Image 1 (tube, rainbow, N blue to C red):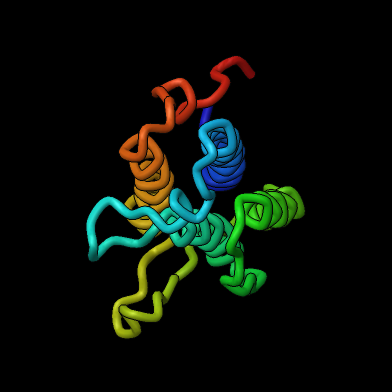
Image 2 (tube, rainbow, N blue to C red):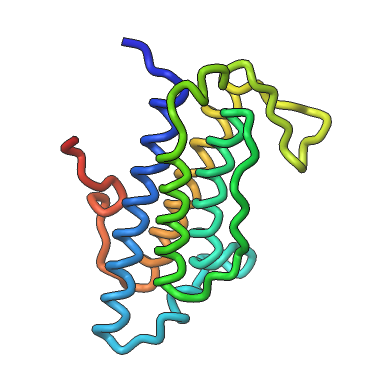
Length: 169
């Protein structure tokens, strides 16, 4: 059985967004239960020079929609980075998942042949396969992991099962 670019990226992004949504819901409930102001978690970061939780979630959204759009040869929908609450982050995740659901396998049929130019590498386009395997997926996992780590660092009781999500499909 071979895997198409669509089967690799679309369900993976959708799943990691769903897992991130559940992680954020757990974090919000934990904060409410302990009477912790949500902004404490939303503005937390692992190190002074790293992005806070809020921005990590926005980047997961951007990586997901951006990767799929680039591999499909399309323009990704633009979402303003204006979220300030858990509810607004959940809405952004839902909008990102809706975009993913709007794409079909045929949209990514030529993904491997795409030449993807990233804004910070204007003279070095990446071939679609390389972009998918060595940029898009690692970035997706990195930023979901950072969001998870920020919340764990703050005491939110999460485990690997929260990160991996439901393994029964």
